[in-house]
Image 1: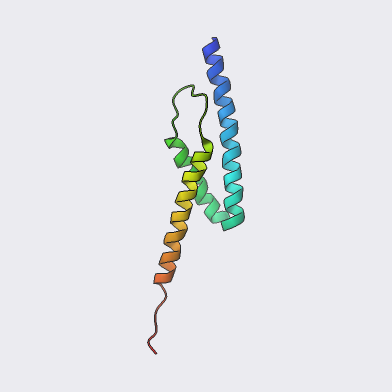
Image 2 (image 1 turned 60 degrees about the vertical axis):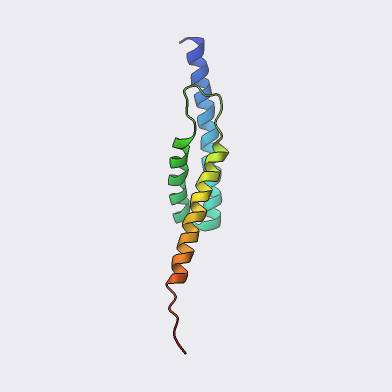
Length: 95
């Protein structure tokens, strides 16, 4: 293994560790605030968003917090839509 390959491997391992910590913190927060069902949906959102991050080979850093922010935006939109749908279900009864 040449030095470039070793650098890529160590950088990749470090980035994976950072990503795992960020995802774990994000899921803990969502679970605490909104429950396990939203946490599960948000985990999928986070993973989807992580695929959109610049993943050029041997990149030295990625902004995993940006992934959490994007997944949080999806969560906020989902909750807003659910709340709006809930208010649409209220039936106004004439007096």
